[in-house]
Length: 207
Image (cartoon, rainbow, N blue to C red; front, side, top):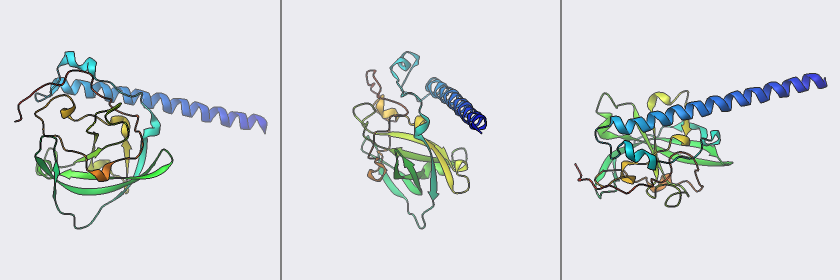
């Protein structure tokens, strides 16, 4: 009986180690693609020499959560303010309910009206949020996570805060970055994803 118990424990430990290794590999792959994206995007505020000023928390599987998706009814488009003083039109697409750091949390998932009319981006959804790391360890204006409608399966979605990234406004002026709504403020420190940019902020004319 004792031998059987030890074998079970050994198998569980082995499975946990394999999961951790796979998670770290996936996180590293995603981060590499994220950095390469700055060099491929013709509208990017950053060049190759700027990438050394990007910093990230160590990938942590505790910040990858399963959320229940609730689709609201009769939602009307609204204007979400942007950091340049203008606004963009969004609609509340869903409410996400999940547990993080031992407590129940909620965030609202949005759909960009303009992007939804573009066939290439019609499945894109937008998850902006603020938390207690803002202005100290992370960008003061909050961070974003991108997901797609296809990520929702059987009324649930995986939200990976390790993929939280800074808006372009963290690096340069001249961009119309949405301000995360107050309803998406998390009352904890989300020590996952991208940290504060340490390079000099650039100046760019709005287009």
